[in-house]
Length: 214
Image 1 (spheres, rainbow, N blue to C red):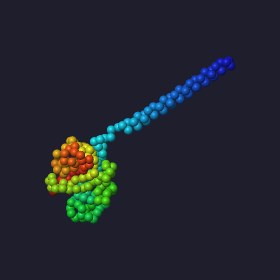
Image 2: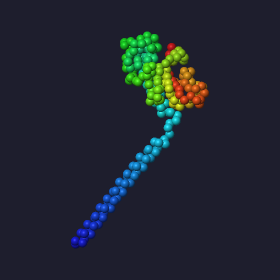
Image 3: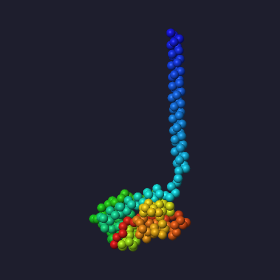
Image 4: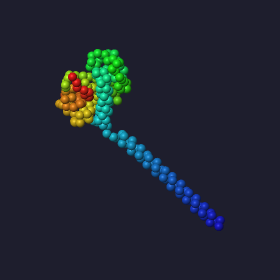
């Protein structure tokens, strides 16, 4: 009987050892799989395309400019004026830098119309997340049915500008039809680049039309 118990004990011990070995091998296999996954992700990240056409940043810029455009339109509904000083969108200024040519009063200004944004020394909105040193200005020009009010992002890499126009207008950028403020005749967005498409210019401006009014 004693030999039987000894035999059973030995068999049980071997089973326990084999079970531990299986668990250990299982853990080792899981660890190896985790390492393979991590290495695969790191390799993909290193060799993934660098978005040469700038579409991601172009989309971000377009969405941001549309937000500023909406804020300007809301302010105009209250005051009757388009401001050319971005700070007026979140802090009422006493200057006359607007389409009315006279100071906007607190009686009509019902801001804030957007959250405060970083400004450069000239009072232009900084858009450094799109490109180092890039800025956003509020402008106007005679054209359309009277005066065109638009946003102009300067210091933008040319590939981003072209993708911006393509994403906004739904058509490939063409220098002949999308250049300067005359480009608004063919869409809501335009660009300022070299005269000939594919030229040596590496930087440019992206333009977004806000309104055309008498």
